[in-house]
Length: 162
Length: 243
Image (cartoon, rainbow over all chains, first blue to last red):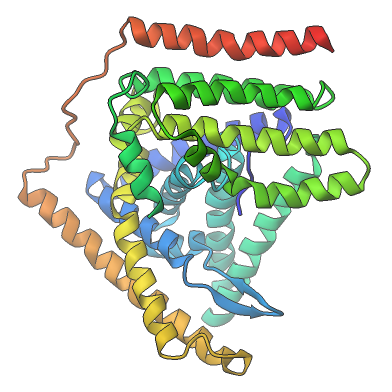
């Protein structure tokens, strides 16, 4: 579940808004330079895949199920800049159409899941793959994604003043 | 299905449907900012009075009020958990404010999403300065979202009818079925994207999307903007005066 409106204080909105806007503008420009316009359908369809893949839940244990966190997967398939654009697009569709996350809180959700989620997974795996074998590197990447996303979510909710 | 309803709503011809998307986006943002910055201490129950504005927009858009409010309540289970902990901490007013603020934003967003077709909305976002590349990606994502979701549903059903939903003893098998399905879905989506791009090239795509109807602001859009900006600000002012 994504952060809805009404949970964050104005300071958090402004800070994450500025960071997300700058990050996404920069990544969109970088992605466009890297892959040309021809890749827009690919990014969109892969975003749709990540969205659909969330429907396939798998058991984690103790009665809970997990779903795929698409950011890192997209980063490896498309490159980090394209993955950020694709994840931002997913969140932009989820907020107004599925009421999953608020419209104002979109900036915070983009910051957590598109920017931090993608880059944490991607960079951690890149560092780890030099030294460790690939399977271990994947696990390290996933752990880093979860850690960073949860950390940001925790920081954001800790600062909430309702 | 969920999106089909919203899509059908957005194709209407009411006074809200005919407004320029830029005006609607601006009004929505002003409303959300005014609601979000209203202090919780400022009488939590009158906060619900803000709901009058999205309801007016829904009525002007000739959308079913009950349907929109029911759809908006998707946000409630999540904030109910947080509200419950706030109540347990003894701050009932703050809990009400939390739920009201989260819930208010959803009908407002739906009033705009339900009266603006997605391509038109993206056209407005582009005119307001969003990166064009990102908007294209959103466009394609929206186009293929339900195609691929349906494929995922079919795979899930296929796996379930072959026993993937069996008890905890078979957890390893379920995990295996899920990972296999994901991998196949990934490959299928990738090849679908390539096919879509080839089809676009075959139909004369030359690197930009052409939109048929240009945007233009008329007196109706200006009145919506004036009304949409002054109404929430006036309500907020009244709340502060009463407090």
